[in-house]
Each structure stands twice: as C-alpha cells, then as structure tokens.
Image 1 (tube, rainbow, N blue to C red):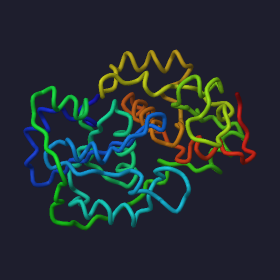
Image 2: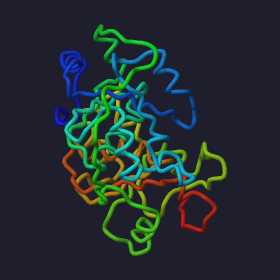
Image 3: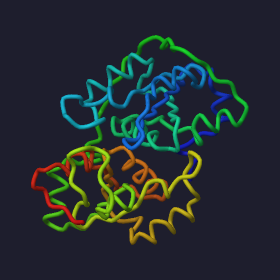
Length: 280
C-alpha cells in the first residue's frame, strides 16, 4: 500500500545520486508553535536537498497562507529547482508528517506523476545512520516544467458552501484537533470564529501518524470508523489552513479512495467574520 507513495531512507540513500532525482525539504511550521523551517534546513538537511517553501510557491495574491499556486507560478518555481515533468521528486519534512503531504498534494494537483515522501522524514534518515549537510544548496541546471492543474483535487469556498447548503452526499472531514473542532479551544490564528463547517466530521490528523509515517492500514480504518467516516465515500478534507487536510486526504488515498478533494482556504477562510454558517 505504502510503496506507491513512500520511500525508505535506505532506498533514498541508494538512489541519492540518480541524475533524475530531486529531494525537497517541504517543512512548514504549525501555527501553534511557529519556527523558521528554512533556518533549520540550513542547519541540517539531507545531502543536496533543496528547500521548498510552501508559503512562497503559492498564490500570494490571496491573504491566506500557502494557497495552491497557479500553473505558471508552480512551473517556474520547480523548473528553477532542476525539476522537469519526468523528475522523481522525493519530499520530506522536519516534523511528524505535518507538512510533507501538503507538498505531495501540490505536486500531484499540478499533474506531477513521480512524487513520493520519505517515510519517517529526516529523523528516520539520521536514525539509519546516514549523513546530513549544512548550508545552501546549489540547484542543478534549470529545467522546463509544464504544470497541468487537476481541478478536481481542490475546492474553493463557494463549492464547499454549495455542498453544505444542498446537503450533497459528500463527506466534509476536518483535520483539526477535537477541541478546536468542537469550539472548546480558540483558533491559533487571530480573528477567526470557533466551531466547524456544518455537517462536517472530525478526524484529527495527528491520530493517523506516528514518527513521520502513517499508521497501518488496519489502524487507519479503525480510526476513521471511530469518527463515523466512510473511507470509500466521496470526501473533501479541511483543517486550519489546508496543510493537515492533506494528511487526511493522503490517508484516505492510501486506503483506496480516489474521490477526495481538499478545501484550500479551510478554516483560515471559512472561520472569518464573513457570515458563513458554522456549528459549535
């Protein structure tokens, strides 16, 4: 199940010198404990790994964090990193699978076929005894990249509102912590209301992962069942800002669901004082 989406540290070590392979550190910090991910990358990274800043390779015209970039922005950014449409991209993160699935989702949504995640991230790499590097990384020769956005992978506010108002048979799954979902804890981003999208179900993302990897298929199925979520039903995932929504989306993908999309604006957009309906 996992081989189509993940590589092991030993596999990456054996293929690190492949001419058509690019490694990216796609770390992003959680809003509850922000830190400088690029600085940490400078201090320690897998050899030749470039830093993929998800807040910069984004649609920065919108006042929301790390929104999906347009095709031109993405193509130019990854082309400068030496990536073409056939490059094998390996993504890892400095944290517990918090941000790597979002980068994986961005690449797949832009039509990239050869993208996988390093299971366990940089911690697993170091635990396997492999070396790390410090400092800047010089990208390889720039490449031409042509993105083709898979529009069905992403939903906007109007589309989600239509799902809510028409009560369509699509699950809305919220990846935030239960206390935030139930309006028992304030949002870490200032100015946002408390609660959740009406009719949505809660699947806290961190319950699905352990030490930078997804839990077993059996465990994932049990976790979704406990939350009343049908793993086979058409679904849209959401969270605080569209980051950990990708964790839930990827978990469902691993379980064979091919009809899962992501609400890009998530609660950072829906939770504003904008009159959109919410439930506590």
